[in-house]
Image 1 (cartoon, one colour):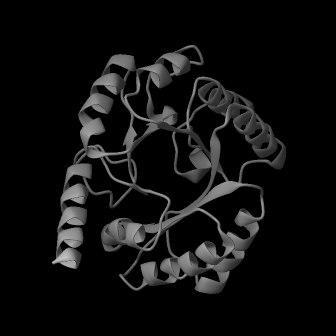
Image 2 (image 1 turned 90 degrees about the vertical axis):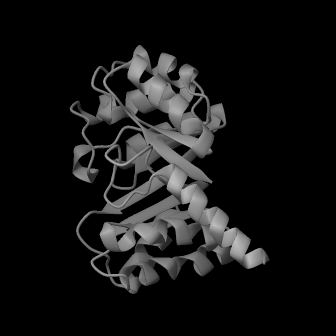
Length: 231
């Protein structure tokens, strides 16, 4: 599955971009922290206007996001998204334990899935460190584990990809790839290794992380790969 991050100034711009993205993807990630006129009352309207299932993300600044309020407010907005029907809710692994438990309980009540995420915007750690982090993250309940690092060269995403056989053996849904110029193809290759889904941008210039490929291009590449394998 392909997920496209959606953000904008207001409800109208978000709605318009979601409509354009829908034919090229399977999920829409609502980057609530990047919506300029965000308010708790706007969240149900945003979720209700989306043409595809929603991943609700309200990224903290210490994890590369732009949310300007406090942690209690940030999590309350995610709770509102879950209450409004978001299928997934992204919660940073470094979030305080009591807040993770709170949003996890709310998600369970509403039938939503928690994506427990970790992002390294500077480098890709050695495999032993990656595996240790995966072990810790995957032990925290029925979650989708998301681990995204920055590739300084193409060899880095091989280290990240070594997590997939472990996740598959344990039955843990995993999203793992690399950001940056050297990691862009790992976003596509991760699907072939069993990624729960991957991320692509609506178009060039509307990416929410370095190295995102426009969704239409990603679809075309995946189609070519499938055709080559079948011929």
